Image 1 (cartoon, rainbow, N blue to C red):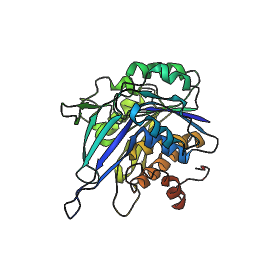
Image 2: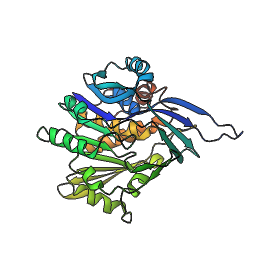
Image 3: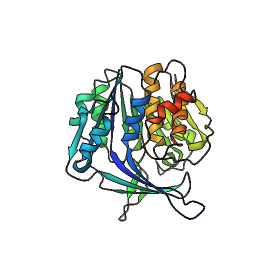
Length: 318
């Protein structure tokens, strides 16, 4: 089994919520698509190969490639070096859920030419980490390339509807061509804020789900942070709703990367079971446990933590 992963790498600088003594903790680690790749490396079945396709700035390239050696299921042949700096993302948390994001040095979109050699896969996961990871034309080319092989395409909307101010802060703006982005995919993931800001139309979640699943999109997933998630599933022209409750966790939490982890865990389970409901439930649990780990510096602990808490459904072997 193989899975191809496309999206931008970034260097996360996480400014945690102020503590009771007024001090503010800071965590630096690889983020963005690294969360996706590292999670997949921990939870896919034995014998699965992960093919990441993205660029790394020349100053971080050697260090990052060395970091990937810890993940033998990852084939790094699709990772390339560019001269510009790697995207740096500052995340300023006001509390565990609310944050302001600033992005600098966003990389050029990953070209179809770089993605094409890795499309003979069992699944393709595209994570719009920066919102500029690929162009819409490239997505169309990917769709057409895998159409006859029926390769499932999973899209995490992530920052797709975020613009950039002059001070590098990210701001939500409607996506006029959102229907074309969501067309003819296996599943699309977005959180509640992303869903509400997707269109200029007044937001109604079930209306959005009906609109989306009419675009040859069988699954729309709305994540809700600590409150779990909802999957809207097109079952023979009937829109089924599958709600998954949040997972109770104790101690300080860091929501950074939870969406990236969710998408990776969904794809790993879907490859193993082809069951949307089981995949959403698994993703919800693994993403919740990620919140107990600050940054990506200890992402390797994710699988051990998951196994210890019996998070893995029967039939899935990390």
